[in-house]
Length: 156
Length: 180
Image (cartoon, rainbow over all chains, first blue to last red; front, side):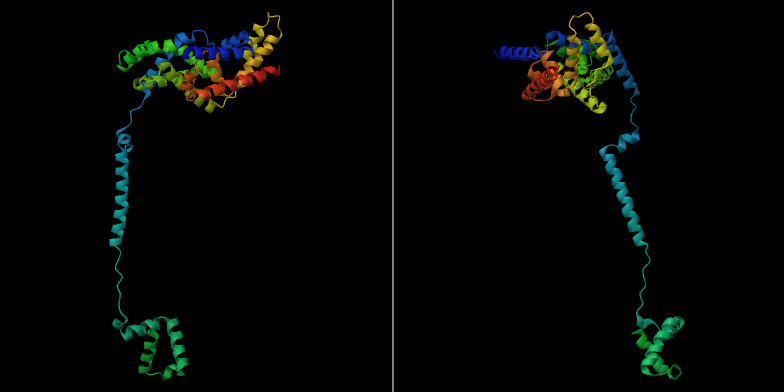
């Protein structure tokens, strides 16, 4: 029963189209748009099989390099090696950094301090002048004790 | 068991694959070609696509499980390959080629009905201007007497969708032809 219904429906659809355009015109359209060149179908299978064989021969086998490195495990191995190299370089360079020696100010002798101050003219002039002005004293009049006091003040 | 199924089983068992495949081609190549040509309209394009379709069938036939008919499966491949091709080529298909005009002019040369050529050209233009889906549904339904279920399976759409496409196609053809 279902097949009859489908057939009836098909007939209805085709009749509907033929009510718009004559069957002759429709058939002519079909012929002109589904024709193929002479001998096309006779030669098609051979042409197609020849093409398949050619494509088979032209397939290049992937190199071992590609076979390994393009696989998931290969990619993971490359990534892990890269991380190890970067981490190792960082740790190695950190270990080789020179330790900064620290010295407390008490370990520095007064002579060393004097030499340092005298060798840095700007420090010497600026700070001595300030202290001198402040204390209303002149350099020539300063004794060794007073100089020590000044130096202490500078250092502090 | 149909002849298609028997050949496919032989192919899958690697029994003389090339001969079996050639036989399958000879049985179905015309329908596949016509299916494609209805969409692309040019022989050169239809030939290119037909070759791509059969190469795909060769590569995938070992895995074909025969859950659907072989013809439905191959027509589905042909439909998809043609759509891909058209998208790449961006063909309009609204202009008649010179060959088409020559055929129509000579066909009606002996006719006493001067309007025949005009009607034929109008019909040709009307069908060629349809969107691809509507055009293929129209042709499968009217010229190949295909059931809607088969059309839907080939095109990856629903039965309702196929019916709607046919209905729209007929309406557009009617509107186009009535302008004459």
